[in-house]
Image 1 (cartoon, helix red, strand yellow):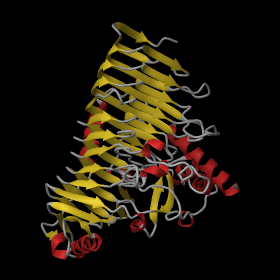
Image 2 (cartoon, rainbow, N blue to C red):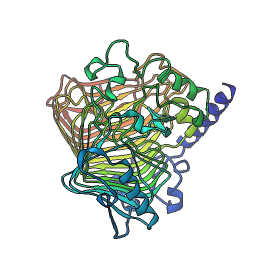
Image 3 (cartoon, one colour):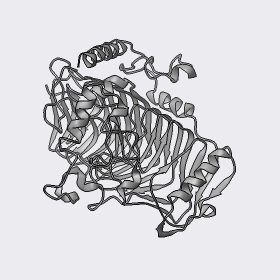
Image 4 (cartoon, rainbow, N blue to C red):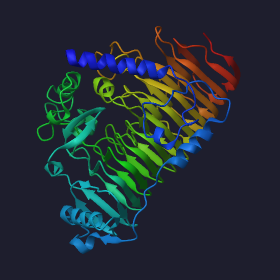
Length: 494
């Protein structure tokens, strides 16, 4: 524990010092400086130039994978698309041959191909033709042996993600086919512990002492990741697609459905493009996309119809986040449709290493089941920071609870109070049109010891909402041409 406390203090001091430096992320930075997420100055003050010029520069600097013009058809390696034959070996052989030949396209043609987990290698583009369906086996033992992965912001050795890449470069998943995780009330989902997802009283679940509480303790005591072994006999569900410590990643055109847990989950990765992807998955914790400890991320032209947050930006949970200490940053989200889920664009709650430089534009959100459009959630056990966040030109038909919710008292589990005061500053909404904002237009619940700072609403029009503004422990919110329930707001109501 003494070693953990020492690491905690060092990480916290580093976080505080870094937050004192203000300025634009990209001004004067060369490409080598962009490689380091720790040395870039925080940009929390509203710039005088268009902040989305920085978003465009982020997009322009992302390295998109390129592949050799060579095709490796899985049928040539013995694959059968009848939905019954196990094609794990055939797909693995095709990927291995492709990588050894210098890269190219691994082709999955029309048909239904049953398989175990798929492990991508550098320079491989896994391409699904129209009509191709990849079905992941319901045999949970097929996802063993355990691999180095992450669960709710904590690293561990666990079941393999359904599609996994570890320390690879120049990888892609493309096409117009479908990945079906085949998770459901009889497979993976019951472990969440909720009856609606098939849980039966007395069956093991993720909240049991040998599961999440054991992992929390291992994280707090700084147990080496290699010794945090779970997998068989434990109930922690795998992510769907997880590139771990990878570079130059493309996911384009495909559909994901029936996920065990988080769907798209890049961890400690950079230069990520997610384009034209559809996620339709309503299981427990079925977040659509969760960039974690990741930077230079472009999410565009996607549709999210999910059982949890559509997009949730993460950076580690509690002790693990402070140990890793890599902020998620330089993230551009545009031209996306959020149909259903707990939140449209969310930051947290696993955000202990911090989040900065997030740009959201030209998106639509509309569902009576979409709880919040924009959300930031943390507490004094998570700590962390969120700064330099921009939302522009977003059309919202209906949300259930709030258009903007900032909560520094978030707590799903008990004992969420600690010694790590979160910092939230520089959150800007502009050109936002809302038909029905639900319960609140703006809901901010900050901390008296460190209020939320620098929140602005410009050209925000909310036609209907029960309570326009509810703010606690925040510097005055700045309103400009903001109209809620027909009334013009010039400043906050405190």
